[in-house]
Amino acid sequence: MFRVLIVIIAFSLVGCANYRQSLSQHAPEPMNATARISLSDSSVVEPEKSQLLATAYHESEELRNPGVLENTAPLSVVEQVSTDSINAETFAIPQIPPLPDENFTPNEQGIELEDVINSVYQSYPLLEAALYSREVASGERLETLGEFDRKLKAGTENGPMGYYKTYRQHIGVIQPLYQGGEVFAGYRVGRGSFQPWYLERQTNEGGEFKAGFSVPLSRNRDIDARRAALWRSTFGVQAVEPDIQAQLISFVQEGAYAYWDWVAAGAKLVIADRILKLAEDRTDRIRSQVENGFLDPPELTDNLRLVAERSGKRAFAERKLQQTAVKLSLYFRDANGAPVIPGPELLPPFPELESIDAERVALDAQLALEQRPEIYAINLLQRQLDIDHSEAQNDCLPSVDLVMAASQDVGYRTSPKNDKGPFELDALLLMEVPLERRKARGKIQKVSGKISQLSAKRKLTEEKIVAEVEFAYAGLIGAYKQAQQAEQAVGYAEDLARRERRNFEEGLSDLLKVTLREQYAVESAEKAVDAKLLYFREQADYRAALAEDQIPEFIQE
Image (cartoon, rainbow, N blue to C red; front, top):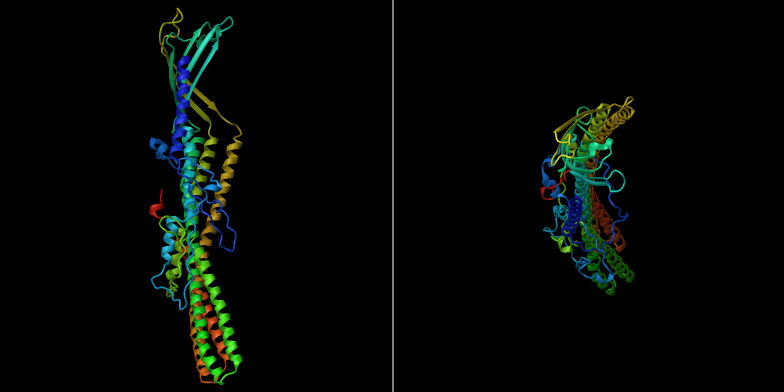
């Protein structure tokens, strides 16, 4: 029997070592580190853990499928990279494209917003990090499945010295049942000279085989702590999906902001380029007029000052374009997931603004209630509370357990009476009843209060979603009207600037009036760009309010 125990322990240790080795072999390769610089005005913080954690009552089919243990995620391996190994392969630093030339014009075939959104879907690192929360939830579920693992029990108890010399060894297996209770089987050997009051420890020469089961008849029949934990963790796996979707919506919204900022920076560069060219084209003509005595020399000096000033503004617009392009590269990536800083040749103009149908708001609000992840998360949380309530009601029931056990000794009899030889069957009925049941009643009261809180929270969440849709719609309508009015103002300002330049060429005006008119035109054009930027930002907000971004199939489980 000693040898049997030693062999069992040895196999257990070897099994654990092989399991750890298999985990290390399947662990993912450590990814290359990438140096990043925060380009936003606010500090970068880690995304908060979702407060929408929810679980629910659900019978697990994986319990009947042994393959669930094979689907567990491998452990990650973390390696420390020394400074000597940091090289060009470790740091994936994108190249900053060159500055645009004069007479820059946007490209009608440039990058579209959908290209950026698809890049976010495919390779945005924080979305990838959010997807790993599935492995965390699956690991927690696998941990609860461990409560249903078979347990091997073995032991040896020996008294080699004294008046009564006894030697006892036993080994057995216990299997918890998903329906409640457990089954058990074992084998034991008891030899030696036993005390008269411990003769039941003695077995026949071949030992005793024993098997049986225990079944709950009242408490723990339909639900118990093990099944409740499993059901909660099962819906915990589902609860990460609305959290992933919420983060995806946020990432797409941020990517849209970065894209439209880049487009707006390009539009302002076009304005700065055009206004600079107007001043440069006047220089030779004013110089000729000054040399011929038609204008005073300060007019030329003032125009040269204007050229230098507008050159500085164009340099500022170039810097802004490059900065917004670098920020966009966080969301716009290549097929390998590396950031790509788009060059000015990929810059598109603002698309045409679309009019908004006022009658679609009510339908969109209803659509948002169906698609927003907050509602799905509250549903899961409701199911979790249902589990807690069922478990609390289960604790109110009396504990009544039926235990059946059968045993049979084999081998040569150890006593002349052969009292160990016959087949034995034991039946036990065990009962335990808490009289006050305060623990169960307190838990029911607590869970009932949480259910009432959740009901009120759900009502407010639905109202907030509708309010967000209406708020985004109002912003979109206002930005659309503002952009239209700004375009009209640009037309008026440019018409006045053209008239003033013609008067200046005919000697009916001076450079100061021309400069003021051109400055008004620039300001109007920049306000029009800001109005369009506001419109498309509001459009991104409206998209987020409707939760149009759903987790696609290629990143499903």
